[in-house]
Length: 416
Length: 139
Image (tube, rainbow over all chains, first blue to last red; front, side, top):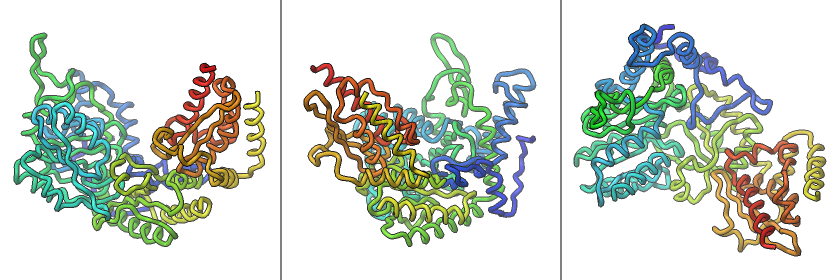
């Protein structure tokens, strides 16, 4: 198995062949073939990614960056190749700007603490939006408490879009950072992050983009966006759990203090003073998730081989088809009807509770997410306890949609 | 113990259901039944907040026995509450505190009482036992 191939071969789009590459989709749930519609929470893994994890532990396992022996060298090469794949995947200028994390949440916490403790003080403002995931709210609240800064919040319209007029008013010279979600996990809304970044940069305010829900569906070109920080998770883009990525502009990463202390992140240590390692290692204390970085790279290559354009076409077809079919169900209410949407559908059925619908769908072998989706402030705004959310990935098909629609109809009949 | 007699009764009733549909239809019917709690008790003080569904619980002591009333915004959760109340309400505090609720597992609804499900039911059972302990030590 060659884990350090430099070139990606693109392939013709074959939805059924792709579906077959995800072994878990052969499973049955409650005696019925699994319909997996919760990829926005975590995607399933293609065989190539599973094999990469196996391959690492069977052939390459050794600690990285410090062994003089060949096995450690090979592990290091594969690990650092994962970083190079990630650099190419998001079009970063340098691998110095690619930090491995445990996921989106850790990436946001890292920036909130490292940026916040150095640049935030009393009276400063952190600008977020009302559609943020809790993981892009709580880390900022924590650093706000430490520094005396405060959160300001861009409102969301009834359709589920950012109120951009309000954004431009809220952005002011007290704003010290903007942290915004690229694609909403609850609503599917694709936000105009480029417009937000340009406006913030016009008054020298850096922007963090939470790309956890964007990267499964679209290219995150960090240079084209001009994002200062961009974070996402491996497990949502067909990679393993426990690995994610934080992109940061080199200038910011150089200027900020490190996050965690320990091995790997140091140059010299005495009891009086420690000097830190160079980028990206300065932020990567401890033994990294080596199999994770390798397998995430394989997942990124997997996406690039299929191509985001083909993925988007397929997902858009499923989104349109599902929206149309679900719309025929009496009493359905969609939450999130933005013009620009990823393949995520949140809905409620009149006279039913999301928990009840989700429980009955599970009995029919259909996996959806129910609840507030870690966006409680957004649920409060709509005055609802939560939604039923179906999210689609490249391995889903129209049959999955048909099973969902039939399942929701059946659940509604039982519950009403 | 009375509590176990009722549990066995429920297990026996559920054994007649042929498939999950019949079982859930029954639970949904239970859930759709009369309100299980006085409307005035559906306030913050009686609320047990779960991620998935919410539960309200009230307890009072009458002639040495504890009477529970409860409700939920989700009908399946409410149906299970109806079963829990059938088992635990109108019982001695000591019996409630020491009870082992094996019937949930036996009737195939264990998943609804899993700590990770976060529908408020696990916290509700815990709260019922805490009430029982409190009443027990009061007397």
